[in-house]
Length: 248
Image 1 (tube, helix red, strand yellow):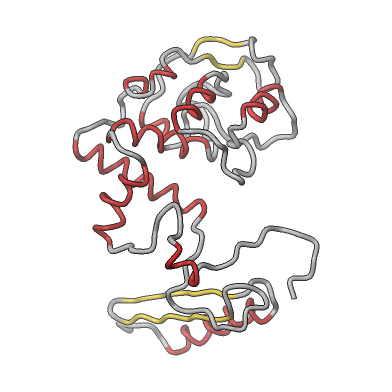
Image 2: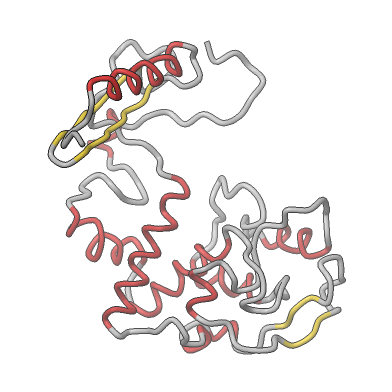
């Protein structure tokens, strides 16, 4: 078995990446593959459509939901430190969830609830089983309307971010009933935001500071964070959303 990358494999990768850029599916990209000490980097296209400058290997991209596993790493480091455990109830730190209620049915009114059968645990939050998250069936339901009115932005696209502090956000979320009993069902998205607030309270520091000190700096992730400093914005790529226009 070859110890490094094959010339055929690298050529096939470059051809595929170039096709995506050439067909205007995206303005540019940076890709890296490695096998052992053999590393191949491709930087194709531009930071934005219409930008004449070639994209650089050091371009900065939004990582979107990749922030979820990063937050998970920070949480597991706190668990490794003994600051919390997977089976700890979260109301030890998030008192807002001391007595959660659960909707009888997804289409129930907000006051048609039953008590949670057990406390929400750290593991429930990290595994997205804590009882609230994306609704993948046609609605809308009363809880969706209430979530929208509270400005939580956790059942739909989270952009622009809610103008709430972490404490305000978690308090508003906890004012809603859960959709499912803790641990009973996987639901995407909301658990990550709850984990962020949990990490802050366990660590006693803002999430960005915890991630920087515990994850980014030890790993040499010098360009990763919640905002891009002015001095680095010339390397920041443009974000595009779905639309009907011609990207070309």
